[in-house]
Image 1 (cartoon, chains in turn green, orange):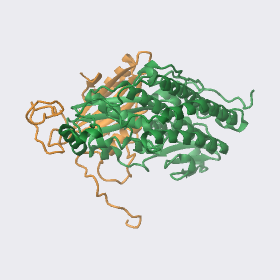
Image 2 (spheres, chains in turn green, brown; image 1 turned 90 degrees about the vertical axis):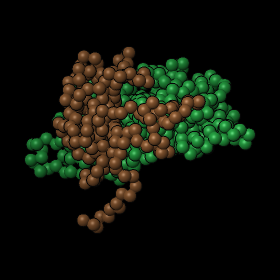
Image 3 (tube, rainbow over the protein chains, first blue to last red; image 1 turned 60 degrees about the vertical axis):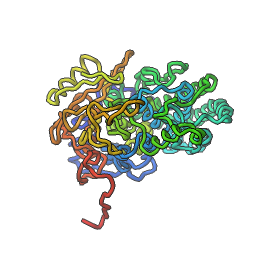
Image 4 (cartoon, rainbow over the protein chains, first blue to last red; image 1 turned 30 degrees about the vertical axis):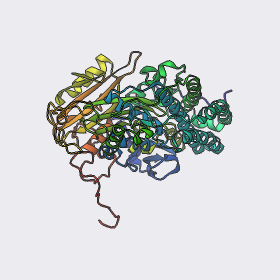
Length: 420
Length: 170
């Protein structure tokens, strides 16, 4: 079924602008003609997914120059975290990327655990993996809904948010809140999983593949969708690596790279899943990668549900982990430990670590430095959205202004994470 | 060269950073720059949050049955560290941290020519930490306003009390 016209496929050589890799400058002969219109796109525009500003040079409808301006959502998370104890700082990362919050929490907790050299019980590891995969689906659904909306597929939004709501219900069941659950602790989980969760999650696993079929039926054969996604926003394999792209953007450019497979963390080496890779490097392939990733995430959740180990959900280390509530009434030692952890915080040995996980958007890293005290000396997040926006200038080469929105959407950026 | 927590850190002289970067990219295969993180070590080893004064051989407060004061962290060579987290995308992936140490105002050469993705990372290090990046094509503030004063992630930058700015006061 060849509905969409054939467009030039992936290009040869490099398209990264020079000398500034992130700024596409209009050529001199066009600037001389005085026909260039410079438009401020954003910072408040529905399709910028937050507060991104693009300064766009237009020649008619063609984009000839683009410069991304970020920082409108800078909230100083990294500075704030230095003022809190490690224990309290776990609250912050989830707010950094409010769409795939569970990953930010995970990466920070993994960094603390790496510094502490604390062992996490298998039940906590598997539960973390399950929640993270639920979160990946959640994030991709938000992406698909909003990206579809921007390209005119309005019904997509309602369908996606229907399933998204089910995922949030599951999070609410586990952590008590729908977003920003702060459910991961250094050493494991805050609470055991409530018994009703398994049945609800199993129901979700059953309906989700059918829901993905629905989404594909809605857009995959829509001529408008194909027309507006195929052959656009091209990013070659070499350019994607040079620009530090990761996650679905990198995999859509033909790079077989997924941290869950390449550097397995949690229990990803024990589950069976596929890493979808496409070679077109366009908006459509990024969409395909995300759709298939959702299917793979459902498979991982299904395996985690069946193979969830029993046992403790948090490490038994009283210097780091809060003692069980009931012990506080009978044990003086527990009371002292509880008091010390809550007021002063646990001490994390001196050192520096970099931990990376595959978030819904790509490589999410956390660089943490400790001076041996109860507060982080420095925390830095490697935000995949921040890096994805660096590719804007390369990907919108030859685009029309309407295509730019599709390209920008396909990079799937969350400004909270980008500006931190 | 240091090994800690299963991670390798290569410390290089800032003057030879680009040379080291090119070698790592072309000879060793670190084609992917994950991240550039700058850290300010001003006041490193001072009083902790709870006011303990440490001693170099001090106790580890996380271990029971040790006595004495808290152990002081190892001193750092200069005030700032800039860490380049590199990754080799291949079937046997590898990571390495390339690190340079500088004092306030001392320049760090730009690696934009080696990894184009360094563009924004270096601007962020300049904006938030005040690292003087030498040879960057467009070294301007990225997250803060263009006319912002100071570098917020430095340890001597106070938290809170930012002046509220109104569009009327020019």
